[in-house]
Image 1 (cartoon, one colour):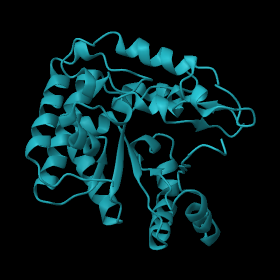
Image 2 (cartoon, one colour; image 1 turned 90 degrees about the vertical axis):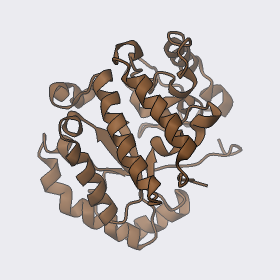
Image 3 (cartoon, helix red, strand yellow; image 1 turned 135 degrees about the vertical axis):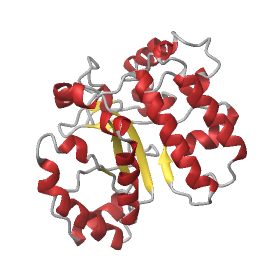
Image 4 (cartoon, one colour; image 1 turned 180 degrees about the vertical axis):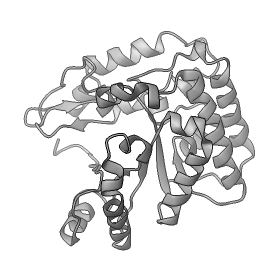
Amino acid sequence: LLNEKVELHIQSNLTINVNYGLVEVIKKYFDGMIGTSYDPYIRLLNGSFEKFKDRWEANVKFLMSEGIYIPVNIVLTRHFYENFNLFVDTISYLRSLGVSSFRLERFTPTGQGALNKSFLYLNDREFFELMIKILDFYAAFLEKGEVFYLNPLDDMLRFSGRGVGVSCWSGSCLFDTITLEPDGYLYPCPELRGRGIAPEGHIESVLNLYDLLYSRNRLYVLSKNHSLLKECSYFELCHRGCPSSPHDCLNTDGKCIEFFEKILLFSRYLKHLPDHT
């Protein structure tokens, strides 16, 4: 991989003891950025939220004071669907810390998450209902010129007019992302690990990046998901969502169509669209 253009990204729950040495490592090897997550309604289930909240907040403030950029992942759970004010409060709290970049993830009932599926999981209709509320919420800020990054909505608003899908919604992650596990084995997106997808190689034996990114595993996952709904007018924007747990778009009571109609509408008239460039 030494001859390839590779960007390294690091993710941490930031409950570790951070120091200036870590700051230098992040700046040197990870372009001054470290991702983290903020999911109190998940972590309350195992008691870890109250245990680590103060340390997490202190670490975020320290790293940002040292010029480290911290995008925050937020998993969309049933808590936000049943009480949208919890989502509003979450964004407000994180912005008060200085966070300006968020990434929304759909909760997937795998691993420990499967044990709490009834408390956390949203079916496809519920998920799109929540995404519509979040889109309206986000558009209200953009309309006022109050810009922050809320992925994938920010990219969807920028690129939907070109008929281009983005982020996990396009499946393109399969062709530009490699997950390196601590044991050295390589996978596609972390969401595909443990779902019957075998490792694609080992960090010490990979010879060709192209063959890794366009492996039989990845092409099979993508073709399987995309073969079902190509007749939908919004297919190029949706691609059935995350390849690891694609949407059942036929069972959303039209909510998926409503969501993409709003995406296209807002992309046409909103003047203050976020631009990562």
